[in-house]
Length: 113
Length: 114
Image 1 (spheres, helix red, strand yellow):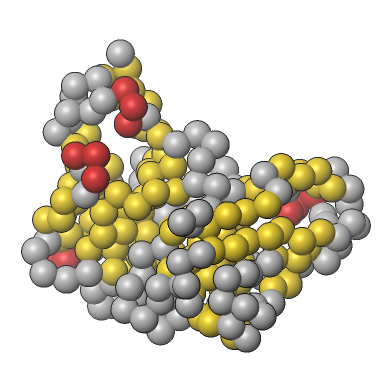
Image 2 (tube, helix red, strand yellow):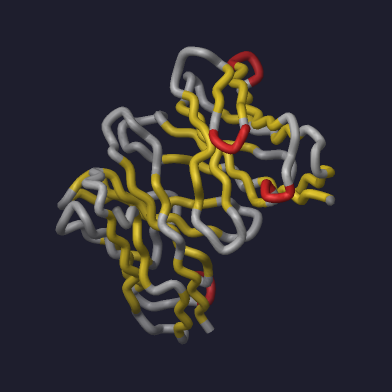
């Protein structure tokens, strides 16, 4: 099992550019989520999905889009990158139902100049 | 609104000394409680979790945590710290609704003196 994988590991964007952060899991988890991690702020939930075709907003969704066409994949799209989106992004997955334990990917470090 | 507080931003302990990291939560009922560890440049790894039952839970790497309902706390402890424990530790709560979301504290960075 690869667990939760994220690509790319590092990315530099210019303001206004768009890009997609990829996330995939091979554990057949129903629940997937995206967090951003900023110094002194812990992890903040951007978007989450409780199953294919179902997504919802978290705490800080502005500037990001998600879709969930398959159980395995949950890409995060930055529509028009801004310096405020410079952060480390983590994808996580969980069995859902009554099991809240989340498995995290290794992260993507994004810099927007 | 639900929240998680980790009052210590940094903690420094000597190798071999005991450790306690504090976590307090704000929620009307008993949430599900978690401690995660993040080594530099890595993702988060689950150390332990509390759902119900015995309020003292054992985790990996020799860590334990105690749930105290009266204090809304879930402090992490280790009797003897190793240099490899230097990392950032996050407390998280879940179970507030049916969305399976976790709310994380801001983290405590542990430094270990040789």
